[in-house]
Length: 333
Image (cartoon, rainbow, N blue to C red; front, side, top):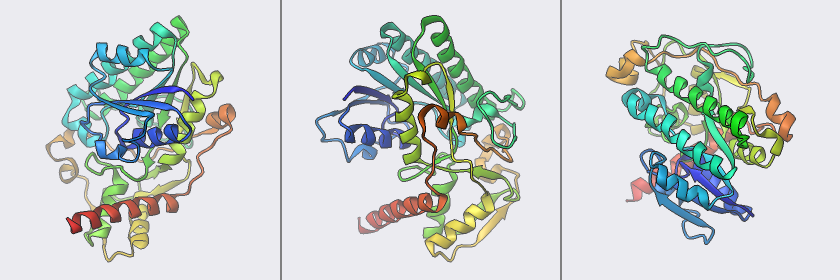
């Protein structure tokens, strides 16, 4: 058993991590300001004696220090999430992603705590190499595009983390998460799978922007959580960066068609020209889509013996079951 602090623990990934740690007997404290996370995500553990929830922000340095003082391991997942949210709130995104991470790292360094920092595949930018490895180049677009504010902020987070490792020997691990999918993911912030599933369940057209030929790799959230725990349980992972992702890629147009099939829906798949206004409104000027992003997860396997393995169909079925349950609950009410 250990005492874990999870920032952003009421979010999509964080809530699944909470459940996994509680199930193995850990004591878990969640810090979340509920700006994008939801208390309902933690319904399964809210009454558990090993769980506690603090509503607050990682921008509150004093609060972070007090919570870190009671922890043995810290998972820092709190961040601005989703393309749409980042385009809408670029300044708040930068503050949360940079200042919040600095507060967590500083507090952990005071006590030499094991800490994991969640970064993103966005840091690779427009590098469309087959199977991106952790040391591959970052290829970013114009600094004027707010799409790259997020990638730049997360890269600074990584630099902070590695600097603390080099100068203070803080046992910190950075993970770059690729597209993570599963129950509780919201489509509000631009996540494609829950949006497709909700449209299909309602019989509405599935809108695919551009030509639909852009590809993505989708990783089940349960695989991601297992990888996070495996890394914090691996002392040699300190001072390292790891991709966490499933390398099987699919065209977005094919993803839409598969969702329709699994939902047994009458929805059509509709290609929408990328004037992007329909996708992101007036914020579209800050957006630039990527054609491809594929992870190489060999390093994760080398250090932990774990490799994401849950297939896309199983992942989509989990999302469909969850969304059907939400739809039925809404209908009953």
